[in-house]
Amino acid sequence: MEKIIMLGVGHGATLDLYNTCFVIQNEGGNFLIDTGGSIEIVKRLNQMNIELSSIKDIFVSHSHTDHLLGLIWMFKRMATLKLDSNHKVNLYCNDLTYDAIIKVAEQVLSEGLIKKVFSNFNIQILTDGNKKIIHNIEYTFFDIRAKGPKQYGFECTLNNKKLVFLGDEPLNKELFDRVKNSDYVMHEAFCLDSEQDIFHPYEKNHSTAKSACEVMNELNVKNIILYHTEESHKEKRKELYIEEGKKYFNGNVLVPNDLEILELK
Ligand SMILES: [Zn+2]
Image (cartoon, rainbow, N blue to C red; front, side):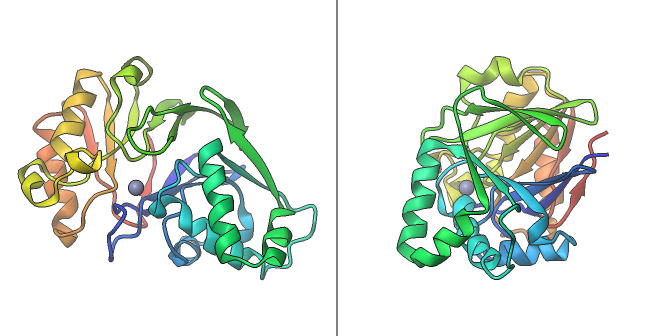
C-alpha cells in the first residue's frame, strides 16, 4: 500500500510549518519529492522513521529556496554517513533546476564534499513527458508551464488512483486535459480567498483555496489535496481551508498538516 507522508505543507516563508515536501512510500522504498529549505528536512525524515540512507530517489520540482535548499543540507548530512560507492541516489530534476543545485552547492560546500557526495548520485535530467519507474510505480514528469522558473510536476497511479502533483503554481490551462477526471490532484493554495488582501497570492503566482477548488471542480477531479499554505490560523488552518474549498468543490477536500500521512482510497 502506497502512502504519501507530508513532511511539510507550508509556503516558502513559513516558520512553524515546514516548506512543502513529501515522501511517497511503498514496499519498494521512499521517494522524496522536494526537500524544503533547511536542515529541518533531515529531522522531519527522522520523525517519520525514514533513514536518510533509505532515500534513493529524490525529485526537485524547481529551483526556489523552499524546494531546493534542503537538498544542500542533505548533501552535508550524507557526507557524514560513510556511504559505499555502490550506494546510489537518483536525483530527478529539469536542466535549469540542476544548474541551480550545482551553482548553489559550489558556492556553499567544499569541493571535496561535493565530489564525495556526487559519487553516490545518478543525475537524471528530466524533459517534458519523461517516464520513470520508481519503486514499481510509473511516473510521468511534465513541465507545468510555470510563470516562474521552469517547474516540473508528475502524474502516477497510486493504489489504482490517478494522482497528479502540480508543484507550487496555479494549473496552467494548457494542462487541463492532463488533469481532467483525475482521482487526486495535489495543488497549492497560498491562503483563503477571504484573505487575499492580506496575503496577495496572485502577485506571487499562487492560488487561494477557492480558486484552486473552482478549477479542479470544472475538471471533474475527485479529490483535491491543498498544500503550500500560509500558517496564520495555526490549528484552525485545516478546518478553515476545507470549509472554504468545499463551497466550490463537489469532491473531497484534503488539507494535510505537517507530518500527516495520506492513504489514497
Ligand atoms: Zn514554493
